[in-house]
Amino acid sequence: MGSKVRICSMFSGATMVKAMAVVLPLFTLSAVGCRDGNKGSAAKAIIGADDRTEIRDSGIRSRLGLLNVGDHSCNATLIGPDLVVTVVHCVDSTKLGNVDGFTFSSANGKIARVQKLISADTKKDLAVYKLDTGSFEHFTPSLKSAVDQRITVAGYDTTRGKWLQSSCSIKSKAADSASFTYQCDTVPGMSGSAVLSNGEVIGLHVAHDPKLNQNLGIDFASLSSPTADLANRPQINLEWPPCICCHGCDVPKLPSLDDLKDGMMNQLRDLATPAVVNEAKGKGWTINECRNAAVGMVVAVTTPAHAAICSSALIASAGLGLPACISWIAGSTATVVGVACKQACVDGHLTGSCDLL
Figure 1: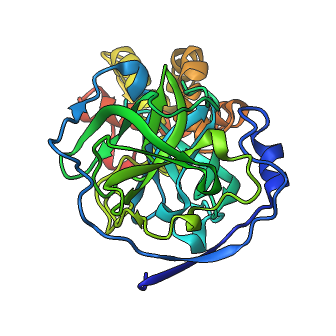
Figure 2: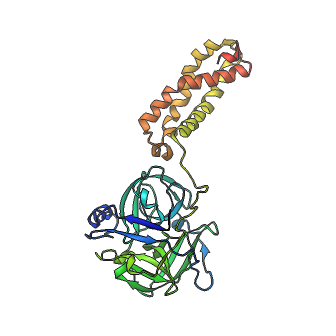
Figure 3: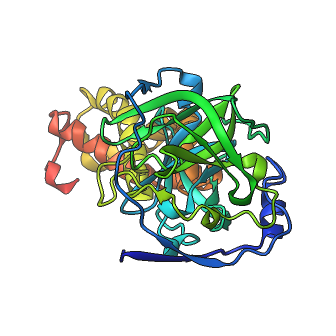
């Protein structure tokens, strides 16, 4: 990326209202335009002593995660069983809607592919993505925010490699920029972290305001303003880098369909091989006799496990539905028979050359 990033909204406010109505009326009928955004300072946004603590509450961790967008990741928050929200300035503006390869990894290790971009508003710096599975625990978005309200900013800190949280109070609100300020501690890379209050998410951490020496969050309660724009706070530093592992790192990745099929084949082999080897003992079978006899045994042993093997959420996520998965397993019988008979041959229970298998 260069020193300037030009990002344009992909949806009107009306589209965003429709997209988010199921969760929260965050957006109203306002035309959303384009604007240039300067990269901000990389200065830490620790105000006073660093009071951040590790998030150990599984109920919070299960609702937070990283949106992996190719060569980097962004803090993101679950606001529906299959919806995550993050900040636009963390996602490369040129691929906001190109979700090929995007995945979401929750803080407790659950992974899903990103299905599509639901909405993106660059003025308010919000992007909402739909996941391909609707089984995540999530926060309820709230429109309740007020000065002096107690909040917690929770997200992943790459400098410490931990999920951290910091609590404080809202210091000010500004409807014209759909934002509020606070002195909860953050560091660059925590953009998109959840701003929580009373068990609900009321906004996202987005920037540092050096003029006020306060941190800044997107205020869900002010999103209905048709003129709200973060550009109305020209002094803010959008935390830069806004992303986790901006140049790539080891983030959880979903296995490919080929990897999943290899795994299923290993399960079938482990089920069938002992039965075939045991049956072949003392029979003096030739290789062809083993092949013929083993078909029925393989089918009998593996069929009861088909549904369990194919019910994996990862297999469904890879686009292999239950009927197609079972059909693939049935078509793999000959391969499993060959593997089982070869093991019986190697163990000395068949006559003939094992190289023929």
